[in-house]
Length: 271
Image (cartoon, rainbow, N blue to C red; front, side, top):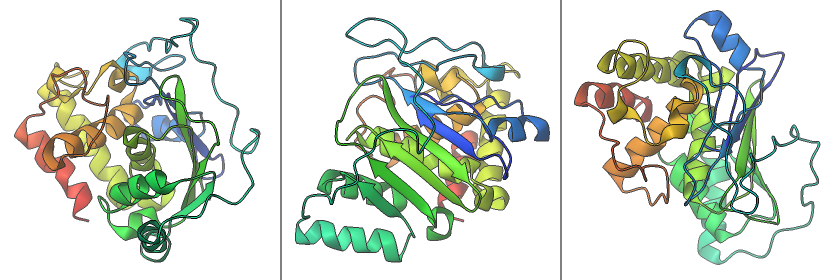
């Protein structure tokens, strides 16, 4: 999935998972700029990953390759402009229904479209990683067709809520898109957003002072910009410390952040 940028509360932020790319330059102006642009997550289990478009202060991003044509994956249409399923999802097993109830009542998360029990379980795994107050109002809409490469998901900030479209069953996508809610959403400005920025700055200091240390990079897509770095970092840290069953987030094999950076990031799960 690929992502791009933020806007302001009135502009609405769209984040698409390719494994995300948003332009963030660390200042207030850059944050507002990010909250108004499309962020999509590209890449898959066999792709190196990359953002569509320029990558902000982490360097230029490469187009995401698709196995069929080798061409860059097209940027998805904004939320609401795509043909999404409107029918009732298939009946869930009792255990999945219980999980769905927990998502709704405890975490304030709504699932829409053609979701299945795998999607429910993945969403709950994501939700349980963060404080319930941080996920309230978030919704995920699932397309009927699922893919493992190309554009895999989209996240959009909409005032006090967040909206995401998911095109894959991979838990990497679910966690990555959901983490954008924590590190970019207006409602999380005083907690998740701040901790996300502190983590990014610590990773930069562990590097060359201008870009995050290589040990803090899950894969090349994390270099797209700071917003994508944050979503990748929290997904990657959860993968290696808590056994999150991701398929390609840390596939590069070099993700091993210094303890001081990890310590800052862990605060996001203990708000």
